[in-house]
Image (cartoon, rainbow, N blue to C red):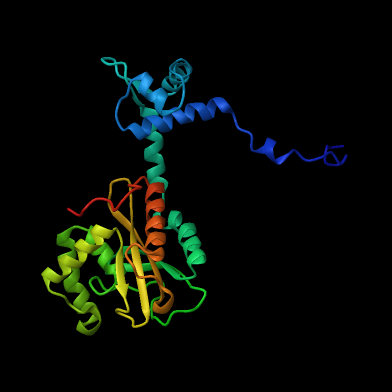
Length: 277
């Protein structure tokens, strides 16, 4: 008869969550070492991990044997080892930006009550690949698969601000041919560069009642480990219930969402990321 058959009590939840402290302590050293970004001496590393040097050293010896940590022969400073690099590369190859962003986008829609779209750079330009509807429906023609105007939408300007300038120049011509002048709304070079500079300055792109009257939006970039934009997160809502201030509730919410997904992809987790080449 098994324990369950005898009616024995189930293990307490706190016991199920109990981990191995030695592994957690070693993990703190690895996290601290990764945060430094360069070889560091034992005392500095131990301090960063909130650990005494005498306690940290045995952990570093074991981590070195696994190749997770290496030590410079000339200085004795510690850095991440080859095994850590291999594990990182495996993770990067396996990561899927849309999959990583989906739960955060869904949570953003739920918490704000507004619609959220995920977009990628496709063959024809910025393309919506996932859409989470708002509590109250929006009167727009945006659907999964919709290709957004490059200069005429917050989503389009987001990609235009962070993709290479040469690619954008060519795509703007395609944008006008594909959508027509009424939808694409061509802008001159000086005006466009001003809008893109605004996106980089605020870290998000904004549209207010344009191109759809009564609908406003903010779009935030998601960057990968190389600093390249791989995804856009666009928050959309009805103008009467949408805070359009650059530092307002909606802007902060979508910006935080983009930064968190970027962090999960190994990208910058603070501020607007790299400027385009």
